[in-house]
Image (cartoon, rainbow, N blue to C red):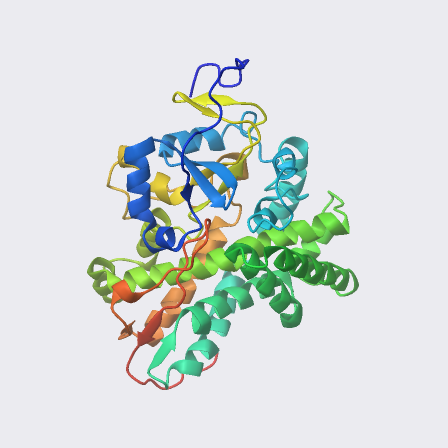
Length: 412
């Protein structure tokens, strides 16, 4: 970064990138993003001109150390997108995931602190022993539903319903309300009918808030309601919405991507099932190489900033590629075996406050499955697995597996 990153900018400063931008929403990018990151590094270095959707320009950060510096500099790289979004069409497919909301993710300073403290207080009282038992109670019936078939799709039949049901239990959310919220959130991540998805999420979660005012419980939503910050219904909806956004799609992808690694990589497949490497080691490798949200941390500089001889335009998104930064050659190759210096959960004041919960839920869900079906294997060659398109997530369309027909597990 320059010594004076926010100093006065001469009118002649080349703040607009000329030439083509790399579309992060394409099927080819989804099929092999790591090849794309390597080409980006060769052509552009640390800062890459990309499109998040047609005619939505952004700069993608693919340098680990630059990402850490940006994460920890909200003064120059604020999270508030309101000026940017004034120029974005309302039907833009990425707008619902990037637009301003009264939550910790899209604010800085006192507002960020107020929202974040309430969320952390709601999460801190979650009993991890109870979560462990909850995952088991949810996982066993799901496994029993397909163990006698000898085959399953671990996305639709396991990872999604586990993530969905565990999050509902944490939030005290009835299934019917949660289903609408999950459907809306999936549309937002896919960028397909994203604005309709946004409305589905907001309407469903407002219903949850009203329900919890009448029927409080020992859950995160009730604790948010009772927090001294005195959040309004609108603010509460957006705090719960943030937890929903982090707790279903990314959690599902973390479980699935780790199972894919275990089932396709001999270093982990034989070792995890054999006991010499832990599921946690597999999770850590996935969080380095295939984090569930590959490109997702946004900031919006309020004035042009010069970094590494590149001008970043004012009020244009700067997006951290956690996947590319984690595989940045400058940080070396000894990244695994307990090393958790990855950026999969973000960094700085906006770092994810629920990373330990995410680890716990994913690890327990994977261990339940592998313990029940130790001879599980892919039903198709690994190179036939397909990835969902979208600029933000790293997500398989399905994960088909086969295994010896097995008897049902005793219910917990």
